Structures are given as structure tokens and as C-alpha cells.
Image (cartoon, rainbow, N blue to C red):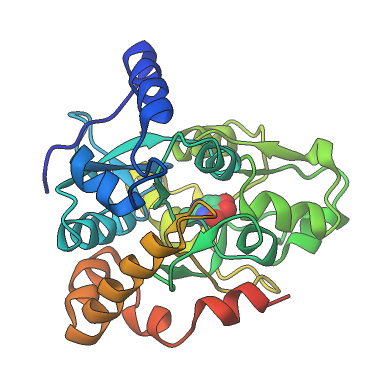
Length: 283
Ligand code: 6CS
């Protein structure tokens, strides 16, 4: 796992502002040529293990960045440099040229598929809820949360779980935006929320680290689909997306894709069994 730069604070903003202005893929050269010259691809991540993770020393890992790093290397782009973003800010940041690609477990949904250019599927997962031991409010679905007027649910801002809760009828003031996993666990432990929702593998990772016997996982959330992400590219970067997909397909075929994602708990078969077209069409 290579040490990768993490932009943070003023330096990061300055650097990303400069790169955004002069980023790769200027008019006369393909985006991929630009990235090769730049020596790295700027990726957006969320720091939500096992999808994406940033260690205290800045090392970036997680299944999505690990797949992206390997594919870009095969394309002649030496490295990836990650910046952490809220899910709801990833697509605007991509469109504004702050990132070259989102590799964060950004699940494919029709509205997102209309806004970006996705690769073929990479990471698939069902949804979960973290609740107090014994599941005192008996939550099995987002609809259950909606029906309980006193219940509050935490979810990432602009994330799929926030959308699922709102769509299930949970009023806006009972859907609490949670900035990161640790905050979500703390808010649940402190009783500020009654459930915290993330994909199953993310919740399981948090539970393991929290080591709190008073927490319980409800998984899968009834009525919620299994989602898959893909690497998300800016509209206009279809050639780069296609080059990414060629390498992704080779790695799926050779077993190297499974070798990267399955130690994180993801199923290669799940991603291989579906497609961007199916996931972007799903209602
Ligand atoms: O794509 C999303 O919106 C969701 N994906 C992940 C990996 N975690 C939470 C987020 O809401």
C-alpha cells in the first residue's frame, strides 16, 4: 500500500485550485494523457472503511481506491492522490474539476447515472442500521423509522441512506446528517439518534472498532436494494472511463479484481453478475 498524498487544509485547497485550473486533459490532449503527464489521478473518497480508508499517516486504502490505484497504474498513471469529501459533494466536485474521478463507493442510481459517467460495477453491498442492543424500537425498515414520530435516524449527507429514509417518509427534521462513522456511533450511544444507517460492511467495520456490547446491527434493511458503485467520471471523460473499464474487465476475468476486494469483505461475483446499464436503469 503506497503512501499517498492527502490534501487537507489550505495547502490542499491551493493545490486543488491550481490543478483544477490547469488540470490534465486540456483541449488538445486526452484526459488520460494529461493524467499520465501529471503523474497521478485526483480521486474523491469518503474515508468509510472498508470502501475507503485514510490512516493516521495519510495512507489511503479501502477497496475502491485499491482497485482504482491498480487500474490507473496499468493505464500508465503512476499514483492516485485522494481528497476526502462528503457524498453529497462528490458529484459537484467532480463536475467542478476538483477531482478526476470518484472512487468512494458512490452507489449507481438513475439520478447519479444521469450526472456522471460510471465505470462498470466495482463494490456491491446491502444497507444496514446500527441500533441499541435489543433493537428497542423494532426497526426493520426505513418505513418503521418513519412510523415512529419520536425516532431519529442518522445518515451521510447526500448519501443513499439519507435518500432512502426521506423517500420512506421520515420527515427531514428526523433525518440527521452524520459527517463520519465515529460521529454516528457516538450520536447513537448518546441517544441523539435511534439508528445510524450505512451499508452493511461499513456498519460492521464500525461495530468491530466500537467494541460496545450495547450496539446491535439490523441487516439487511428490509425493502432497501443491494447497491453497487462504480468509479464515477466527469461527463466528457468517456474515453478515460472506457480505458478504465477495459482494465477492470481484464482484472475481473483474471481473478485479480477478486484478490483486491474480497479481503475487504466484498463479493467479486456480485459486481461481475450485474452491469452499469442494469444498475442505472433500476428504479
Ligand atoms: O453511495 C452512497 O450514497 C453511499 N455509499 C457508501 C459507500 N456509503 C454511504 C453512502 O450513503
